[in-house]
Length: 242
Image (cartoon, rainbow, N blue to C red; front, top):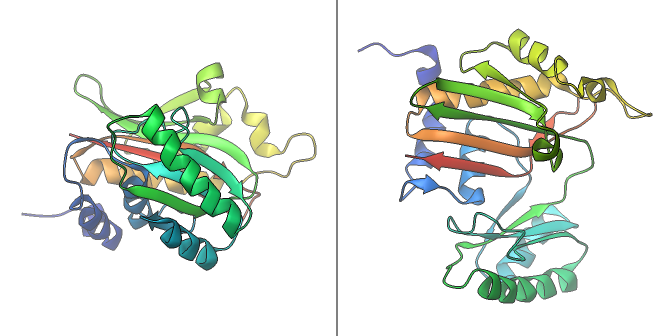
């Protein structure tokens, strides 16, 4: 049986190792989704899953303050609404207090949910928030998605769809066809953003979808994109498996 170049790629093998950790189908917790993305070559924030407040402090010391703290469970799809996201924690006392508050918030806002732990990540610098992803539809096949991200993805719906085997040129063209494409070139004093880094992240998602049929959906929102040459980073990620 022959294999494709994508299937022989070391990143594909690492991704399959991460997929082996998935114990059930459906939406996966963010921490696991990010491990899969990182194995595929997509940059994610420095951080780790912590099971206690002491673990959280140890992670924060390693990656550096300020940090974000996010409650983690596959059943907790709306972390923010349950009080499960706290940002810009500047020091150890703030992190310890946030940990205790978050445990109470989740217990009250999502009773019955057992947390895997809390994800502690170094805060990202500001940039342009985009959304990228893919979906496997039984009727229409698999498509990639690029668009304006953050809260604007639902408010404006400024997205473009691409075939799963799109190349870098097609991805870049799709980005520049967005209604808000002027933001990519720099707007009101902001520098042009790293479109090439966005394209590479989209191509990595395309490879994931082509080589791992168990994944039915990937949603990265936001993908924080920095100035040209400085890359992009997946700040939030959802992976759904069959």
